[in-house]
Amino acid sequence: MEDNRVVKVFLDDDPVPFAEFTPPVKFVLDTTKIPDGKHRLKIVAKSTDNVEGIRTIPFEVRNGPAIAVVGLEDNEVVNDHIPVTINAYGSERSDIFVVTGSETPQAVPSWVWALLIAFAGFALFYFIMYLRPDFYKSFV
Image (cartoon, rainbow, N blue to C red; front, side, top):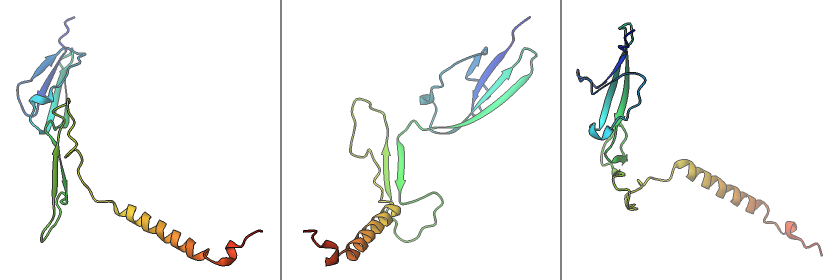
């Protein structure tokens, strides 16, 4: 019996497959040759009975630097002046590590401030409640 099983791999809407294999197969998808953005991997497999199966896998490529924006969210309604911090960092060079710009500065979360205020309030309450001379009498 003839084995005419074949797997064709397409990228986005390209009518020509960039790879054609006989299953089972393992291959490495080199995303450095694909532009950044959203893409689709379309896999068309043909069985020995010439029945086709199709599977589409959406994925996103980001080989360029990661871009972090603080101060403006997606689809946010804004007015007046808005301070915006933009940071871009990538991993192109593995021989050095640049400390400046490696982390995006962000404000301290509000729950940390609330926890700090609650702790300070409890400490003040405890200090006021037990600041009486009768609690500090000597046993001697």
